Length: 278
Picture 1 (tube, rainbow, N blue to C red):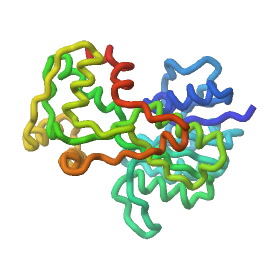
Picture 2: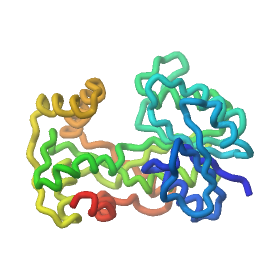
Picture 3: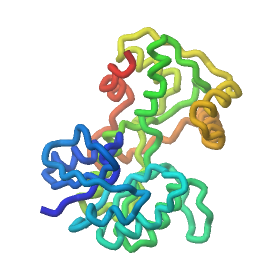
Picture 4: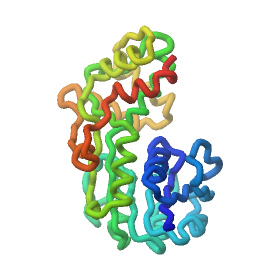
């Protein structure tokens, strides 16, 4: 049976991609850098590193379809990885982000843009699954939730965080069904909810008392830069969150169109992860 290669099988989306393929009866080969805990029985595990494209040769042997997640490795050129995939496979589904399309002669601002361009020019059949911020990013609040107060900026920013399982199921459809070649699927949650509302829902589902406390942007800038170590990324996040207080983050019907069911809401995600907040 032909195997489908999942690059990033240990990731928050990749593990759902693996599970979804296995449930559909497909043979799966999972590429991991080290350990592969929690993957379904019967999945073939191979080790490789995107920083060393030559290490992918064995993983790609006999593979025609590939799910690709690029972790934004600093200082690593993705061209070698895309070339290695294109030399052996026929179809790639790339987990991207909400980014503007890029002309061939335009400089990339975000690494996803450059990888999308490399894939478009590779000769592969491709699908881009462009995901809004993951619901799983809310786990960054876990420590504060346990203390009873979430201090964060822009409590009125309306977000459309997406359940990772929805992203994965859209990717699985693009891997195993026809009709997705050349598609740029923007995947979001089913509604936009304020930051403070997200925290309230987490508290309800985890069964803990938690309140929102507005953090001034300058204080947030200092704290997040110290925690994340990337001032430019912090600034881009603050600008985005501020914009969502005026215009809510986009909501699409991609999940319903592709999967034939509503997108999973944030409460469903919070219920599944309630133990992480206690």
